[in-house]
Amino acid sequence: MSETRRKIMRVLDGESLSPPPLWLMRQAGRYLPEYRETRAKAGSFLDLCYTPDHAVEVTLQPIRRYGFDAAILFSDILVIPDALKRNVRFTEGHGPEMDPIDEAGIGRLNGEEVIDYLRPVMETVRRLREALPGETTLLGFCGAPWTVATYMIAGHGTPDQAPARLFAYKYPQAFEHLLMLLADVSADYLVAQIDAGADAVQIFDSWAGVLGEKEFEAFAIKPVARMIASVKSRRPQARIIAFAKGAGYQLKSYRQKTGADAIGLDWSVPLAFAVELQKDGPVQGNLDPMRVVAGGRALEEGIDDILQHLGHGPLIFNLGHGITPQADPEHVRLLVERVRGQMRDGA
Image 1 (spheres, rainbow, N blue to C red):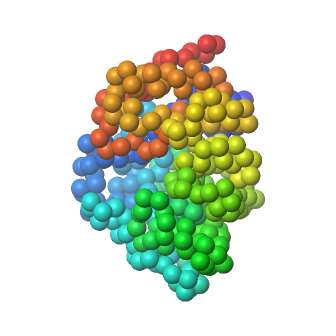
Image 2 (cartoon, rainbow, N blue to C red):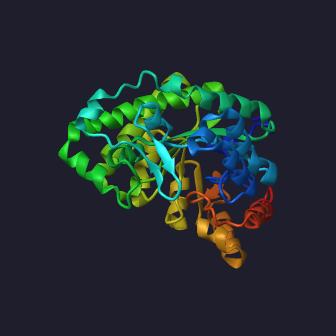
């Protein structure tokens, strides 16, 4: 295999690299002063996502600063419900909001115009592939159907997604229809990103951890498996990372049942369990973002533990969830240096 092939793509094909390649979820974000400056110019958050000039700029900012091995498209998981005409808006201090959907509203959903609506995102992907260094992997992404559905039903984020869970129990047919529609339009969206230049894609299921065993199978595994099968049937070369936050022991079969090439691990996954999961293929993660905020020994020990346990197998070093606004950019620089300096080829 060519040594010039992008490192993250090599890991996604099962190689073990030392030191492991790294990127950070939400690496383009409010912890960076240059992001805050661009965000102020853009106006609304959705304007930032849909304006290629701004979206390209904020995607490239952490690459310029830290030389991460991957850039991830700057966008949001809620562009899908926005494209489905759910009146998505982002209010400062309140997070995302949209018109809550009911059983009748689910029946009226039409996904035929979603990809056309999201053309600015694909333009951003095309520009990024041209602008990025040749060695840098470009990641596209979308939200998993369960997580996107939780926002669509409640109209906003909630601590335990009780509105979506209750809706699923009361209206099981409508809820399954919503999940499958989201799976299909999201698969189309991922294919469009790959065609525009994304090397690989990640599916974010940020609220998988609130589901019971049967619900996890029906709401987290089934629609994601449908998405991945759809993408790979059309683009067999596609490499897909699936991140089911809080899934715990259910990760044991998640990769196999969904068909994901790699699984993302949140910080609550014990490293001994992560080692077992890694025996079946590449893993990504799983540093606690609070260690990046703390810095110092907490940061160093967290990095070293992950490298000690997972660094000799197929690993993409990452956080266990997104970097937080209060993180010090200097701590991120130290993280990158420690990951890249801790292990050498042949170690």
